[in-house]
Every structure is written in structure tokens, then in C-alpha cells.
Picture 1 (tube, helix red, strand yellow):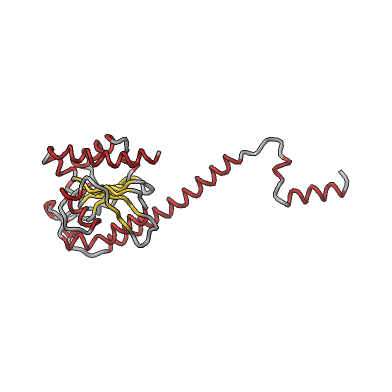
Picture 2 (tube, one colour; picture 1 turned 30 degrees about the horizontal axis):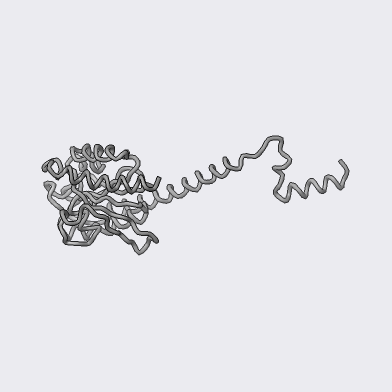
Length: 236
């Protein structure tokens, strides 16, 4: 190879087209896939960091509920989920373990998810209030407002496409309405955040704990779940 050819070869390599000189073909699709995985990893890493910041802020927040609770109950599931399930507050089992929906109501929720072909690790599960109220009482309006900013931050971080509200407390918090759950369920609502450039479609339904006490409402709950399933199937 003469000096002129060497200079031409160096020019080609420095121009970023040295892959033409490889013996085997370059898999551009694989590289694009790897780059996509890297971007998703970085995004999820940032989401996890942001969620942990919310956890720290809730732990620092001074509330009388901390005095009677054992553990902070934040979330379970996938921080990159399309669907977010929101309950009202931890119960006794959740307070002991530190994970939402792990008691009898949690087992029913798992069955509800399975019925529409969803796994627990595919969705994001949380509550309006993150500390167990004494004797499992319903959170007060003041407590709902007290913890609502933390819930809104979680929504902004996860950026779900759909929110499934479990019970009247969650419906009151997210939909900002005094209208009863019976009139709210069975239809889609729109949740908007000033920090997200999207509409999150939201449906209100019955809490699993309520369904355990009043199984006659399971049919209505199943109808709500099917509405969510149809939305998810239409995306495929």
C-alpha cells in the first residue's frame, strides 16, 4: 500500500465509516436495541431516584399518624407501569410489612389483576395516605389533603396512562369531588397534572376490602376492570 492509499484509508476511518472495512456485517438493529435499553435503564434509574426522594420527604413529614403506625407504606410494583392502582391507606398487615395490599384485600386485588391478564409486577400500587390510621379508620379529609401532594408527585414520576381508583377515598383525592362512588364508577374520567403534557384516563371502583364485606358489588367491580382491560387491549 503506497503512501497515498494509506492517507485515503486513514481519511475513511476518521470519517466514521470504518465499519465498511469489517469482515462481518454490522447489526444496526442490535445496536439500536442496546441503545434503547440503555435509555430505558437511565429513565427508570431516574424514576427510582425520584420515588426515593418522595419516600424521604414523607418520612420527614410530621404527622400524628406516625405515632400509631409501625412502618411507612409507600408502593409496590413497577415504577414504569402503564396502570396505577390507588387505595386509601394501609391496614394492619400492610403496616407490619411496609407494603400496600398484602392482606386479604391484597390477595383479592391480585385475583382482580389476574382476571384482566395483569401481574402485580406490571402495575404500580400505592395509597392516598401512607401511614396506617388508628384502628384502620377511614382517613379524614384533612389527612387526604395532607398526603395528596405526595401522591401527585408519584403520578408525575410514574406517568401512567391509566389510574384505577380503589374506593371512595382515592376517588375523592384524585377526582376532587364529593360525588359518591356509586355515581362515579362505570365511566372514564380525566386526570390532568400541570407537570405532565398528557391526560391520564381514570376510573373509580370499589376497594377490595369493601368487596370482601359486600360481595354483591363484585359484578360492578368486574365491569370496571373490563373497561380497563378494553383500553389496554385497544393499544395492542
